[in-house]
Image (cartoon, rainbow, N blue to C red):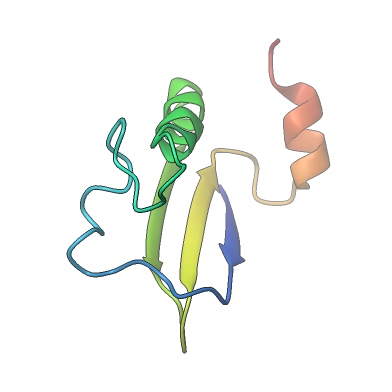
Length: 84
C-alpha cells in the first residue's frame, strides 16, 4: 500500500463543512460547481482506493490518497501497471 499526502496552506476546511466536502454540488466558492472532489473520490474509489481530507498542521487542508500497490513499488510503476 502507498499513501500520497498533499498539504496546502490555504484557509483550510471549516469544521462545519468537513463532512460535506465530498458531496455532489457542495461548494463554499461563489463560482464553484461542487463537483471536483466528488469526481476525484469516485475515480479513486472505482479503483478500490481511498481519498479523504484532514485539517492542516498549522492551517490549510491535507488530502490523503491510498493506493493499493506493492510495498517497494513506486507511484510511477503502480500507475503504469493499472489496467486502462
